[in-house]
Every structure is written in C-alpha cells, then in structure tokens.
Image (cartoon, rainbow, N blue to C red):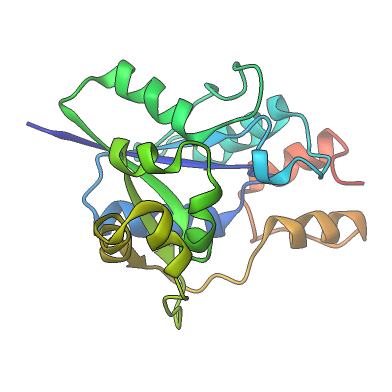
Amino acid sequence: MTHRLGLYGGSFDPIHFGHLISARAIAEHFDLDRVVLIPAARPPHKSNRMMTPVELRLAMARLAVDGDPLFDVSDVEANRAGPSFTFDTVAYFRHLHGPATELFWVIGADTLPDLASWHRAPELVDAVRIVSAARPGWQSPDLAGLRTSLGDAAVNRLLADCCPTPEIGISSTDLRNRVRLGKSVRYMTADSVVAFIVREHLYR
C-alpha cells in the first residue's frame, strides 16, 4: 500500500492557523496520510530578512500541532548547512521513505510563477508532486515563462494539482506586527504558541 506524505516547508515565523487550515485542506483533498511541517533555516528567497532563530520556529511549530496525528515537524533543514533548498529536502525524504511513499510538496498557488527560479526546478518537479493551495478567487497567472523553463507537460501537472483552500485572513507578518504593537494574537495561532511568544519575548 502506497503511503502519501505531504511536505510543507516555510519560514513559519510564527506558525498560525492559516498554515494549518490550508495544510489540512490539502491533506483532505489529496488523501494524505501525514503532513510534515519543515521550518526553513535559510530560505533562499528570504535571505534579505532577519528571521527568528530556526530553533524557536521549530518549537512553535511543534507546540501548534502537538497531539494532532495528521502532523509531524521535521528539523531536517535546521540541521543542514547552507541555503534550505527544496530539492535537497525532497531528496532527503525520498531516501528516508523509499519509493513506496508518494511525496507531495505544498506551496501557495501564488508561488507558481516563481518556480522557474527555484534550485534545480526541472528536476524538482519530476522528483515530487507539487501541490498548490489556492485561495478563493485565485486565477492562474500567465505561466509562459514557467512553460519555457519546465515544459508544457510539467506546467499542466502543476495546474491540475491546484487545490481550493479556505480564505484565512491571517499572515505571519501581521502576527509579528501585532505583537510589536502590543496587540493580542489570540485566536490567530495556538494558545501554546501565544504563550511561547510571550515567554521568549519574540517580535518585540
């Protein structure tokens, strides 16, 4: 029996209910057995922003999903030197789980046009099934550049794997700003994460 494993990378700075609701919608749509949250230590596309240390972001991710059998949290990128390339992470999970496990990499649908710039993108789309969380009202942008880089067949697969997800008006940027301004972030992320942010004096 094939195991279906979702891999959800991101900065998660901090993790919030929008991340988790979208991940659950993806899991239900694609009948995933588990979803692994993978906080990125050094996201190549966010190298110009100072981020909370990855150890703290890992701790918040673990608190957010504690007791939920759908989710795991992986420190694979935290333990790897250099940029957190998706291709390397997918290769790690393929080696870990073997060919019997079908791997799904979760991205936001708004990220699709940028895939051509990802590290080893043509190999990546063959190594893992990339599934996109599409917010209500999302429409496919012009992907001519992506077709040039990856080919029509790959882009058609990517578009077929766009999954409608609920509209959740929460972002990590908003949470950080609210904390900095002394506003509550309760009901935007797990109470355990809120307590951790307060205890560690994050985002002040």
